[in-house]
Image (cartoon, rainbow, N blue to C red):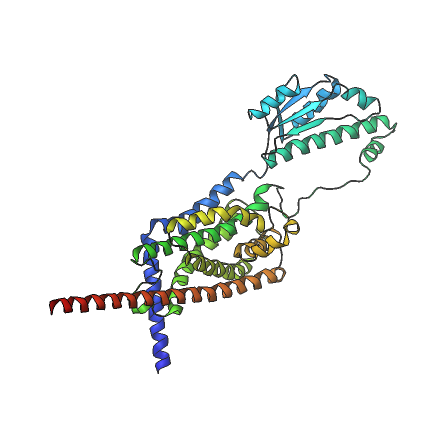
Amino acid sequence: MSIFHNLYRGLQDTCFIWRKEMMQVIKDEGVIIFFIVVPLVYPLLYSWIYNNEQVREVPVCVVDQSHSQLSRQFIRMCDASPDVHVKFYAQDLDEAKSLVSRQLVKGVYLIPSTFEADTYGLRQGTVSVYCDMSLMLAYKAIFQTAQAVTMQMGSRLTTKLGGHYTKREEVIAARPLDYDDVPLFSPAGGYGSSILPAVLMLILQQTLVLGIGLSAGTARDENPYRMLIPIGDMRYNHVFPIVLGKALCYFMIFMVMGAWLAAGVPSMFHFPQLATWQSLLQFMLPYTLACIFFGMMVSCTVKYRENVMLLVVFVSVPLLFLTGVSWPQNNIPSYWQGVSWLFPSTFGARAYIRLNSMGADFYDILPEYRILWIQALCYFVLTLAVYRFQIHQSRQHALERLKFLKHNREAHLSEKE
């Protein structure tokens, strides 16, 4: 009978803490922003910025020292491409550099004076390409356009000098080995479809850590001893109901936010969606729990509300690189790969991309799926340990307070006598 009574009492305490945590979330504007507003708006902003997938009409400057028919053909073909727009002509390279420094153009095509003579004289003609490397997408557009145009012009010259009799012979001579360029797992071949799915998973983790950290900071601010666990409330004497009640509050909110990030945003912006809803649900359950318990553990180290924002802002970009999406995973040093295993976003982003963008079966992400469950369990145990330590500290403060009050009362009574 006592077992059922303890279970019933534990359930009551869990529901009380869940209700109190939910009320605190609703009342705290900062937590509302990071739990609801940021997950709703931030992905839309990112996805809208990269919705075009590729950079088009990048402005370039041309330094044509050849002034020949072949150089003008090269310029026309570059300008006709969708990626490059010839905006300025410069007399020399110094003038072109000044245009780049003023950000009027993103690159320079330098055509030497011997361009046509070298090409028709069976010597290799050259075109120098100078790019502003501050934006990799612009560099890619400028360089690949010049490369494609020179290859196409070279193929035409090859057919003219080959002495072929039929059009078919010219086509085979210009391109003896045909191929189709198909971007894998990114139909548009753009930045958004390849990177933003990982960003969505990272947003879920970061907003959870921010919101839970702010909530913990508020609890410390309301406690005169800056303790995370209130002193004197008997319903906060057991660690299990505390952790479950708080986690249930966060899980209920991020059931909705997780569905929005994993399915709503990709559908709205037409990102690849190859996973079934059953697979996404199976994957999102351990990932959300791992993020929740990770955030609760981190929140125990937060003494002031502002600290968690500084921490999350500092690690956001490194965590994106450590996922192995924007930077090849095999090129990440083993030390940093070990550090990345501490964060749920590392395995969450990899599993989500393989599942939703690459069309992998659920069994293909079983290693990441198991690791996420292990992380959820480990961070749950660590959270229990840290909260137990907080309860012990709260009791110590309460005992010290009682001793102080008792000592003052005895001193006051002795003075009266």
